[in-house]
Image 1 (tube, rainbow, N blue to C red):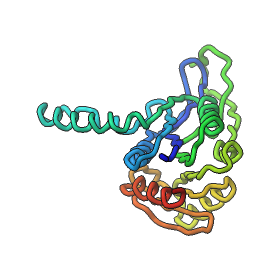
Image 2: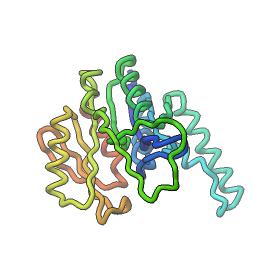
Image 3: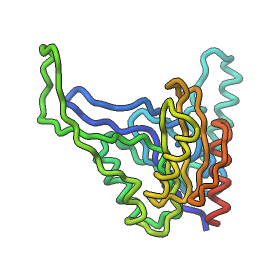
Length: 240
């Protein structure tokens, strides 16, 4: 029987007023690659993604106008047939705000038989209660008070005690040792079966150090290029 895998990807936003929001830079690339790898290995995917996040196989289905029309048609036709093969095993759930994310993840984990959850989304840590309308832009300074959101990862095993949980921990401008220690504690606290720790170098997403960390504190470095392949392989060995 195929594994049922819940993957979250992209970011959430906190609405400040009717036209503004506070968000992050997540594009959902990692989550989409992980979803693609699971699909290739026969899993059924429940993909919860933030606004403008990348979706499995969709990026490759975009035409490149710098290449010849004939070669692009041939490439896209092949990819399209591949997408049609995988699409019956992919359910997608778009969300925008933290509240939508919370309810969707909780609903899937409590109402469906999920075997694996991969929490790759960059979820907003703080929320803001809007009063409706548009804040004035005439003020020289604007002070807003945000309230801390609950940590979804801390509730996953309450909603589904048997699920295999993969958590992510992102830091910036820290040493490898600090990253590993922080991510390890994060995994233990939230009962993750595997934690993906990564840190930005010089604040850049283009330069990252990534490690897999287990509850036994096994630490394994992994490249960004091989992240999805190695992650899915490791999870399948644990749950199948």
